[in-house]
Image (cartoon, rainbow, N blue to C red; front, side, top):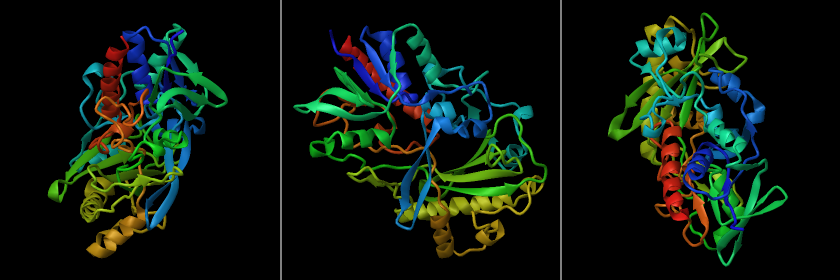
Length: 409
């Protein structure tokens, strides 16, 4: 019997690849995914979903030489980030997913979103139309039909013979494979390769990794509460030298904290890159490039102006910029050097890590230096997307799946 196609990771990319191959080939398909099926696809409140600890896992990443954090969250669920994310779509809706997104109406916007719109922002298109877009749901239909098999476990390594992928180890089970497709994400996919000994014959694993630098302001609300979607408005910022910023409004600070809202300020097109060590440790290298530091400084100053504007003053009081309670008014008065120093100390990553295997694959996602190994997740993107990543990841995964499907037919 012909060995199956084994897909490592049932996230956004893995579900996309599996669904396409199931519809366009007759090959046996196995998806290895340790996460659960989310019960929250019909629940619009982001913080309630991401607060379900059974669907996320915390990782430790180094942001920069000055600071580390334990706050990097990754999805651990069928459907991946699409099962737990804030549902914001800041880029174009993928053609093959038309009709699955929409813009919220005025009655669905909370105070913080309305304040951001009044300050020059706009309602964001959402991955929501009568329910959350989660490709894990489509995959479960294929499982029920017997077209796709699920192995509820984590892949520790890929087994190679003469530099050809021949099997994966999923927990304690060895699964023979004709083709292995890595879709475990930009942190776990390179780690699987490193645990498999690929560093001996594949160069660049983990090099070029990127994320969006982020500063988040806490907004004590005058009228605590939330409405509809936790995140439904954004404001785009054009900074100097082509830098692109994004402000995102949140109606709550957490599932159990409706007394505070949030405003996040992100640099969407950073130049800085990080790396992954041979042991799998991640350094994101945020703001290593001086141009990124200058751009982030300009974005933060703009955010300070926004959260102290009249629309925000009407909904919140005494906003702060970090866990130490530094007042926004004090941040706005900092000189350039001091502001960059403060930003480096207050930085946080967002769960948009990309490009960690971009230097290891060809255009079809095949890993150079080996055979039988394909990568089709955010790690193959040439850089972190200039918008929220679900759409670019989906489109790239589908492109690679189409090419692989043609070969397998």
